[in-house]
Amino acid sequence: MSIITTVNVADKEVKLTNLQKNFWPGDITKAHLVKYYYEMAPVLLPHLYNRPLVMKRYPDGIDGEAFYQKECPDYAPAWIKTVPVEHSEKVVNYIVCDNPAALVWLANQGCIEIHPWLSRIENVECPNIAVMDLDPAPGATFNDVLEIALLVKKALEEFNLRSYPKTSGATGLHIFIPIKPIYAYKTVTKVMQYIAELIVKTHPTKATVERKVAKRTGKVYLDYLQNGRGKTMAFQYSLRPLPGAPVSTPVYWEEIEAKKVEPGSFNIHNIFTRIKKVGDIYRGALSEDQILDTILNLININNKNH
Image (cartoon, rainbow, N blue to C red; front, side):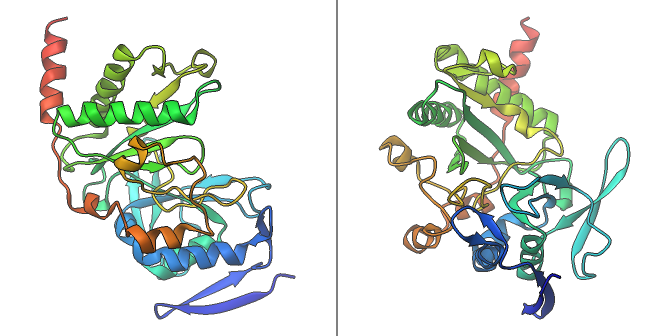
């Protein structure tokens, strides 16, 4: 029988269960998972604010079966905020994680990863973040990922777009571009496709947009399709279901240029030391409203010429 512990988080009661259960090899338990998100709440919550959230649950830790859950379960506490979002087949009531108690409750559900939408509920059809997901195929090194990331940065800068890199917590890098929420998901996807294909044209031996995994060998896959409506990816400061409990961590472009970043550089044990030292590198992204019109005009001109 599971021991239930009730804790008070920001004046809300949260029931915690199976806290001693191992969630990662090396005695990292569910209690560590809950504690991590509780302590990370002040840094993480501004980034999750008003975003629909997909739960990726690992009830038996990283070695057990995992599943995605979009619909807020019936047994969720009444104070868990939800938002209805229409999909072609049905309406889904997504959780919106806007307070520390909700984050702790999600952790107790075995949510190792935090997977929000790229848009906020005020304008759910228009993302305020564009992303480029850099994923090395077998035969490509992390150094290759760093090199391609710098090319993405340079290409974006040509269009006066600032970007924010982070480790994926696995083998790749994610690049976030804060944008004004005035473009549909399909439009943002087209813009990121244009950037990705630009990189592939100049570096065809190291970069690819090939969707078939077997054809990506030795190259870095530029996944612009992550910008689709309802697509989610592990956000900054999300734990990852890999040995050592790595954390998807914002990094400076200077660290990438100096090749001072490793795939598993940051984890549940050292991330708070990192934040104490450098703060939240992504904080600036919260207040940026960049526009994509220059690239869109270029795409339209190119389309007219074909």
